[in-house]
Length: 282
DNA sequence: ATAGGCGCCTGCTGGC
DNA sequence: TGCCAGCAGGCGCCTA
Image (cartoon, rainbow, N blue to C red; front, side, top):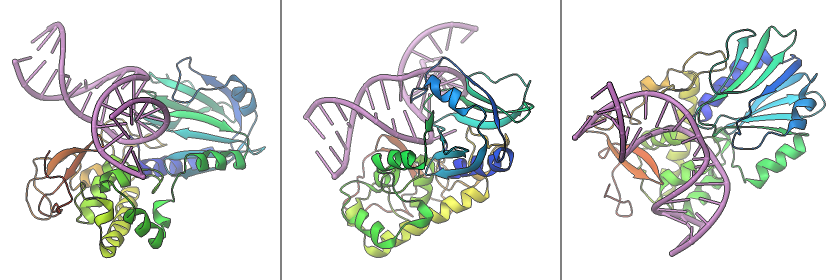
């Protein structure tokens, strides 16, 4: 579910509510998330204070006293937010950290359990984890030369390139489609066929679209809520995502949908014309 | 190196 | 009304 703008919104909203708070108790559900929870982690979290809350790609990182890094991925349906203690837990709540005097709790809820909660012993271990997955650069910080080279050597369609977290961290299905529309590039176009002006257009489009979405506190389709429980607004500004059959906001041509890289893909056939190297079939 | 398929999960919607 | 297929902001594994 949540892509970079949603994760960034959660981080911004949790930061003031978490920073400086002590973890007073830890409860976990029995159901497994994507990465297994180790019982020793619960004991290690107790009494730690949150020093900082940050983000890397779609990963939320809470830095704790003593160096530990609590790392959370929201998967498709994850929600991470603060609740007053005593509020009934939503179904599918998998982790509850009581904070400070116990009047407030951080709760992680994840219906489909594609998300994860992991504890790393220190920053070095966490860096090793990101390195082992070859997590790419933050989208606002992509070197144009690096980007051109990644595209020039990409023997796959642009949609697949944007979804690859090793190329750039944080883009998912919605913002891949929105960025390709913004850059006026067909999602099925092969990466290596891009001229350098087109590559540069795409690099800028990715960061523009993500920044706009962050300003709107992300997109809520069905599950996503920010760290304070508020929905996002950017879904109202989608140009193509989820709009197949509706008019393109730029040229009024019908937005089309196809399946690329296993994912539902939306684009305007007039604004994002297929080149010879792009698939034309659905 | 890449595509494509499947699996992990649950829940919702639309068609019959 | 009920059932079933298809769909969903992610990602990792397998095979060809």
